[in-house]
Length: 115
Image (cartoon, rainbow, N blue to C red; front, side):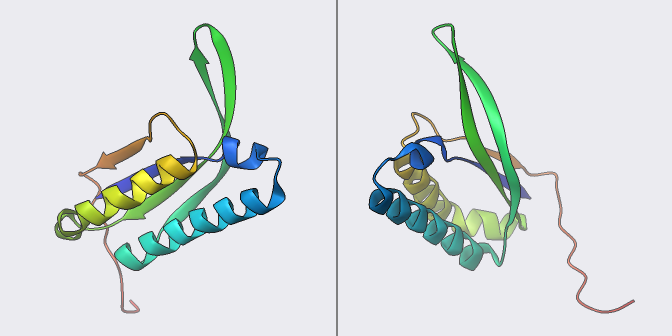
């Protein structure tokens, strides 16, 4: 199973108060650490720009994708914790909605021995 969390950093990076910005970015890193502990790891796709329309006005956001690969049983066992972390990200990044995508057909194969 593949879980993608789209983390929009635009509002955090625009924060003028350096202390507030740094504290918020630290909490965001703590969310990432919690996900790593929950699933054993994650990959961050590099920063990219997203474009979207609101009432005919074009906006640009700074985003990252946090990608997690896990098995279905682990996902089902951790759904509540995942939802709590994702809601924390939504609140922290001041988003109206938080995008998360699930691809249940991705089945990770972890090779643990040399071939």
